Amino acid sequence: MTRILLIGIGGFSGSVARYLLSGAVQTLMRSEVFPYGTLLVNVLGCLLVGALSHLAESRGAFTADTRAFLVIGCLGGFTTFSAFSNETMNLVRNGERWLASANVLAQIACGLGAVWAGRAAAFLIWR
Image (cartoon, rainbow, N blue to C red; front, side):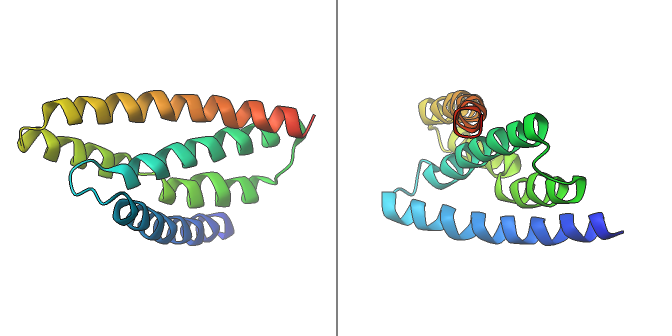
């Protein structure tokens, strides 16, 4: 039961952080078309998942409860595949097929790259 509560608290925290950061980035970029905020939170979340996963696997840095709180809760609430999918579909519906394709490619390439970079950074920093 404790782990479920930790995941719930982490999910709440991650969701609020996503809302605030994504909105700030979208405002900063002055774009009402391309979802820069969602792209940033997804890439940042992937970077953090990579780093935390490496630390957990190679160093045993976290208890199972801490890992559940951080990865499933916080980062699960922070990153958002549903928002990415919805925003891509909205771009398609609005006739922005090129931007929709760019969003899909950027999310996938940057997300995978960020997980790799997070793992590599954690490896280099915490050998």
